[in-house]
Length: 200
Image: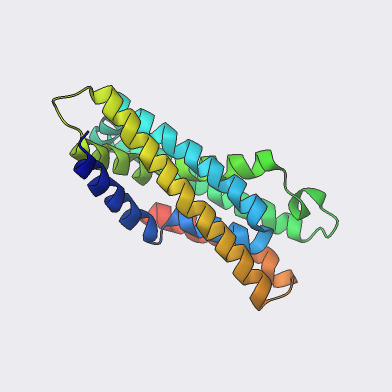
């Protein structure tokens, strides 16, 4: 791939990841409610999911889902159900003051949360299937180009997600002390994301 094309692609990615979206909302809310460490692990889960979307796009699964809206419908409602389940689980835990798993969530749980939240968003898969081919040249190996483009996409997204996580955690520490109201940030975000997913 030509250097100019790579820079153009990278500039487009920066523009995409600067726009507010569900991934940014999840990372920022997690950073504000749970701290930078948990939010960064969540960002790693999102990055792994993006890699899966690139792979599925390369295999043609995105085009298959676009051709069969019923598949998108099921994934969209499945994703919304998962987000509502997470919101309910957190709200239930908030009424239990001594719940250790919610005060100090495990790294694995945070990773899975980020992974599934992004993976169950069909718009992310469709984005990869529509965005990546625009920068693929017919004169070179499509597989190698997809590998390079996918690596750039995942790395750029991870960079911005970690940046948002650190900024949200730092800003939260400065503007407020730990309060009971902070426990409801993530549940509210999950409900909002579920509504956005169903309405999209």
